[in-house]
Amino acid sequence: MNDRVAIRVERLSKEFTFGGQRVQALREVSFSVETGTMVSVVGPSGSGKTTLVNVLGGLDSPTAGEVWVEGRPIHVLREADLTEFRRRRVGFVFQAYNLIPGFSALENVGLPLEFDGTPRRRREERARECLELVGLPPSRHRHTAARLSGGEQQRVAVARALANDPAFILADEPTGNLDSANSDIIVNLLASLAREQGKTVVMVTHDRSLAARAERVFEMVDGRIL
Ligand SMILES: Nc1ncnc2c1ncn2[C@@H]1O[C@H](COP(=O)(O)OP(=O)(O)OP(=O)(O)O)[C@@H](O)[C@H]1O
Ligand SMILES: [Mg+2]
Image 1: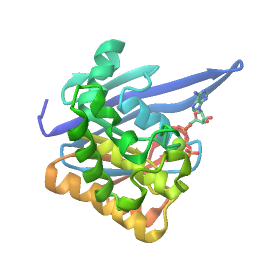
Image 2: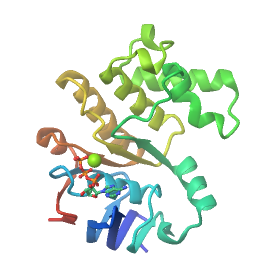
Image 3: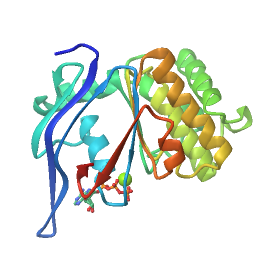
């Protein structure tokens, strides 16, 4: 395989069964993404965008098809190896943030580093750097997540995704709660991480003009990429 290829997806399908109903969230999707590229994913609500990023990052397993990341077959990894892969290689920005409400902004961002034994001071230093990158004012760094506004929480969620310096950033609507100035900060940041640091970024967004900032735009409709 070409080692410029960061992500390769072959006939990827995901079906959910819930309350006796079956939903085909992804229908035989195939594509590849080169290392150091930012792609955006757009499409109507329910078209499969979150499902796609979750499967790419090993948070959810496909029903059929293959996901290769850096030449590794993610679709066949066992849970322990998937956890390791996510921890070392992937930064997630969740659509619903998934912050720990009682933890401060600094503690939330530093949390991924706690798992690999980074000392407390270094964690805090790195968390502060990441919060600066996303434009969260220092006066907010010690506030608990529960006391931050929606947009502030969203920026903390982006900062947390950067903490372990991941090769892959999977960002699900990272600007959904931000005004246009702060959306620009985040999208510029993601684009520069791809361009200058060779990170591979997948960004889901409803905003067409932000989507257009990526090198490629994937249009999803009903579980397919057009
Ligand atoms: N855990 C689940 N169980 C059952 N159905 C699910 C589950 N997760 C997603 N789905 C269904 O799969 C389809 C795709 O959902 P997905 O969350 O990927 O959409 P989306 O494009 O991210 O939408 P949005 O823009 O609203 O975030 C939807 O029909 C959804 O109801
Ligand atoms: Mg979604």
